Image 1 (spheres, helix red, strand yellow):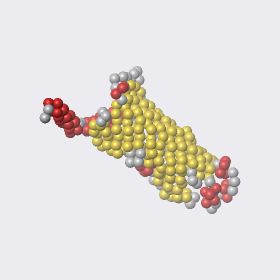
Image 2: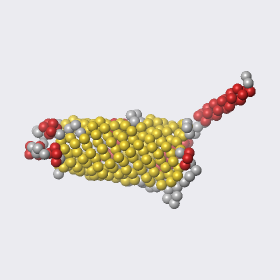
Image 3: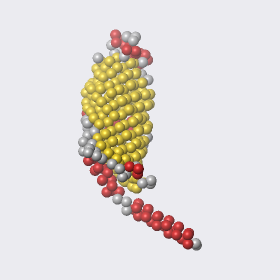
Image 4: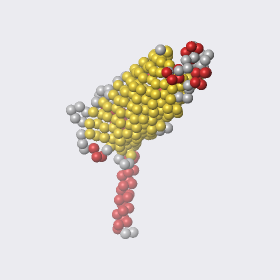
Length: 288
């Protein structure tokens, strides 16, 4: 065996041993606790629980079994998440990390940053791709409803460490379905091929700026606010909008609603104004 081959084997052996020791001695529990604590201190309205942390290549961290909550409301459950620092910014005042989150049905990828100065600013920009609504623990916990569909869109968030922040989102839900445990007007559920929404998030308040519904039985638009509580079902609703029933749906309601109301031939165009109050668990629905 030539000297060059021996040198190559020694180098390869050294690298393998180093990688093995790095894997075996990797401080998973210490890093897991550190990440959870840092998130809690930087953005107190968020809490994260991580099952396990391992080293990733290119340089970064792989997180397994991640649960993220916003003010005790579960929002993301991920089987795996990967975070990597941006090496171009590592020595500057702005620290940047890229992340990729894998859920059971979709993924979330984006970038987080921390800009240091007189006042440190934390920011987040994330793209949501085909997340199954039925996999979101907070929605599954709502009684009397079964909500399904695929969620996509963009979310931004900004805060200063130790203080609650604010954010905004533009979302699209496709193939949405709302199943009712207790039927309303003889209907056991509604299907919406498309739901588009724009919303703002501030501490304990979700402002629905616009929500357009395109359904199989009914179209409509909704706006208003939700005062967030934990559990999510106790959140207070203050929503209003207009519903535009399809002709087939109106025909099915002939025995359930006032004849004079349903007899309006222009109802499908003008719409039916409504308001929703109460809580998510016990909503109050009224025609205006």
